[in-house]
Length: 380
Figure: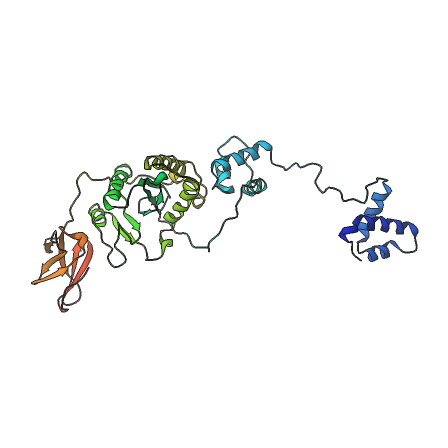
């Protein structure tokens, strides 16, 4: 029979007594008690030692632990974790590598965090292929994080964020009172003056940079086109297209906004400014092999112009000016609809490859089409 947990010491004592009585071989008694001969000899040896508590379990803790992490190192790990509760073992390892201490492996740091109750098991999403553009300033991702209320019902904060796709560098983290075009444009002008112009922005299809999947042109988008900045819209209902910005929002929430409240926008902006510096210059980034975003970012060589340029057209283009009050142009004796965002702008009409079809262009961008064979008006 196997050992029964409730009477383990009694069975050990009985086994030793029976061995002393003789009549059965050692191997046979071990078989009957459900133990191995090696275990049987161990108990006989301990009983022969004469200790009163020989049948009790001994501690399995080793007498020495030469591989145990030093108390000072554990304290350093916990200090970094307490200062940055959202950081994991690999990020803490990269941070401590800058300090004059012997840095343990990430697995050891993780064990320290678990042992001291600092770890909350993460919820992991399905694996996906990571993509990034090959150089800074080719694409910036821009979005508003969901608004959150200020203390004492003093309004709402709308956090505007801009991330460089290649380096993950946070170019803008602004506490705004609304999501209006003028507010975003003011922030863009400030960012452009400091970092230069990107080649393109990746945005969603909502205001102020889109009016839904069918009407993606806005006044803000037209302003960006004049600066030579393309506007790329993500697939409708697919926020993972802007995954780096979405991930930045989750990090912002975990490291700045979680369990905190702010009285005014100025207080929020102060917290944003401090954390943006930490994020860009000190916080190790897992997607960058624990480097910091600032190590991979450089300002754009394209400076913000002092005067907003107008689009240039070829001598053979048919030029029209969109009415300032109604989004139409006149061509071949008929009115043709263009996106409302281009009211007051000068556009060009160019023939397409198909008979009777023309494109309406703002610079190099086709914004609407004309089909002379179809009745009615053509929408952009």
